[in-house]
Structure formats: structure tokens, C-alpha cells
Length: 326
Image (cartoon, rainbow, N blue to C red; front, top):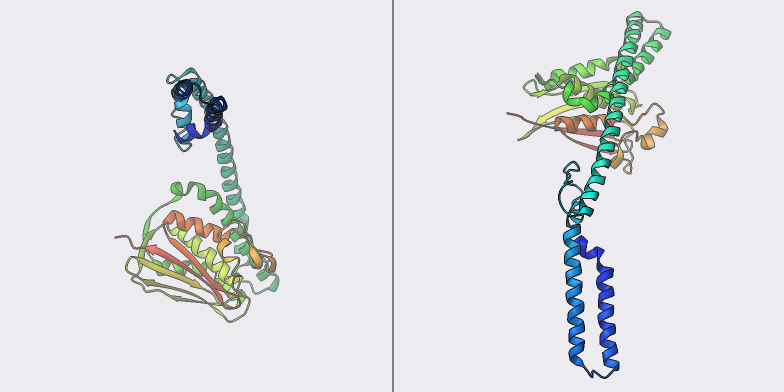
């Protein structure tokens, strides 16, 4: 009704002007026939109300549709209302069908793209694994450099793979009951060479009694992204990366803290956006801006609360609140 009235304000204003003009004419005439004035005003009012009532009945369904744009678009009424309303609903129905056809085409293309990406990543993992085996336990400087580059390739492939799987997270999710310390230790071991290369030391302070139900693969990838960032942005040798957990009334509070370069205060509200690198991205060209975005998305999927604090030249602290499920 409100939208209907707003769309007819010009008509109501025009009617009001005509009524006032009529009164003005009779005023100039000296009100010689005041009954005629009342008749004219009454006639205008009746005709206006009648016109608006008929028009509202004819266009009611159209205005209802426009007033509730969030209503499910597929609920069309092709055989109800006035001919105009039926034509309007038919038009929407045709547009919706065309939209659905295009959507299905793009979904099919997107599915093909994800299949191709998954296959490509798995194909690339094989030669990377072979190179890693060939350079293991070698003290040669060149071979160690190859190992470093292999680690970067491996991390990049994992990022691509998990990004493509994020859209189908529910299809790739397996719940396990596992100790938190075990998960953290495995994630730290995956980055052992990176710790050694940067001359940093992991410090894990988690009680053996803390356990949770989660997907091991996704959780370790999440931790890996945070550990990798902590190492990457801690250029000073000899520092530690601290990973600790405490239990509150309803959550486990997992903290990853580094003593690196920190993040600019102005960048903090945007660090979880995809491809955002900020000021640090200009200093470290290998930054992609996807790590914290993926961490944020995974935390949403797992129903974890994620927060970040940072200070320039002091370090960064990531806090993950994991709900305790009984």
C-alpha cells in the first residue's frame, strides 16, 4: 500500500490542485453558489477514491511483488489478478527461467573448472614429491635451495587445491575426535624445514587433555597457513612462534603469536579479504593475500571465532575460539 501511494503522489497532487483551483474560482466569484462548491469537491473526492480503488485492485499483486523483492522468485501467479498483473508475472517467469538456464550453464563450467584444477594439482604434486625425495638428506647447498623452492611450490599447490574445494566444503568434510596438541604438532612438523631455514623456534604450550571434534585435514591446513605467515613475517633470527591453548567455560582458545614485523593498524580490518596484501605485501613480494582469507573462510565453515591483534615491530597474535561440544 505504501508503495502504491508513493507512486500516485503526482496524481493526488494534481487532484488537490484542481480542487484548490475550483475553490479559487468560486472565491473570485464571491461564493454566490456555495452548494455547487461542495458538490464539485465531493465529486472530485468520489472520483479520485474510485479511480485509486480500481487501480489498486488491478495492480495490487504487482505492488506486492515490488514491495517484497526478497520473496522467492519462483512463486509466480500466472492465473491470478488482473490481465496486467498476469502479464507482469509471466514476464518475471520468463526472465527467471532464462536466468536459471544461464546459471546452470555457469555452474557446469565452474564444476569443470574445479575438476580441472584438482586434477592439475594432483598431477603437479607427483613431480614435486619426486624432487623432494631426490633432495632429501642432502647437504649440498644447491639441493637445499631446490628443497626450499619445492616447499614453496607445495604450499602454493595446497592453497590452490583448498581454495577450489572451499565451495564444496561439506562434501569434503570428515569429523574426527583428536587431540589438539597432536594437530598442532603435525602442522609444526610440516613446516620444520621452514623453521630451520629462518632460524625460528616453535614453542607449543597445549595440554594433552584438550581434544576436539573437527576435520583433521582442514584444521591442519588452517594451522599451516597461520604458521607459514608467522614464519614469513618474522625476519629476525632466533625468535619464537608461540602456539598455545587454554580452556574457557564454553571454548578452547587457540593462540598463534609471532614476534615479527606486525601489521599496520589501517590494514587490520581488511586482512581477511581475498587478495589483500596491504603494506606488508609491498615488502614481501611472495604475499598472495589468500592465506588469512582462507583461514577466515574455514573458521566460518567450522563455526570458529577468529580475531587478530598486531603491532608494528612487536608481532601479531591470532586467536581462534573453538566451541566445546559435549
